[in-house]
Length: 305
Image (cartoon, rainbow, N blue to C red; front, side, top):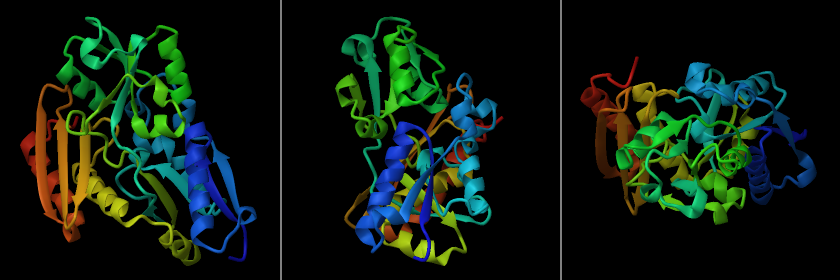
């Protein structure tokens, strides 16, 4: 490599840990050293807007558009994202084709008094800004009140401890990386609370014509995670899913087979549409597309405005 590689990342503690993990993976699998790779912090619109749902101000792209612009302008060579924060449709001129080994995709609850969801007091306030999580919680506890919570993990835990919420729902992967596991009150099985498509996956993006970087990234791609990422994301592509789409999708690979289960909620959360399928592993792209089409028909577009 003739020049230093610049990795672009959001500036949150968790995002920088993901960027560092990417850097270490490149060093481990290539002849590049620490001094050859630089991490650049990039502020995103999603980081600046903290008090309303993302769907009200532009959706998932709020966490990625500024970073992608830096990539298009050649100010960075690689962009690191949490896959679940990326829009389903790829940005023109860029490619997201590299994924690190998946972290735990499950959802967790942190609550005052270490109570589980079913043990929370009547009409408790649960913090989440995700429609999917809200509808999944209500399926288990119809009485609880879901209230919007934004900000990084530290901010959310602080708000919980200040008594603004009785409990908050977060992804296990983030909690694990930030070493907050002792705060966990409950871990939900993926069958009980199907996570967001791509949850727990670090996605690495570059320019589609940058062959030198693409050849480096091929060396750090985790093949099983790559297949699971595509399978789950293809459901979103068919549904044209955005921040307002309450959808969970989770895949498992067992020897030569891939199984996906997915659930989609209507806009108001009153209807739930579920599908589960198994296919041969080489059909990982097709299975996601197929499930997306089935859910679209089942829901009769009731998940869209």
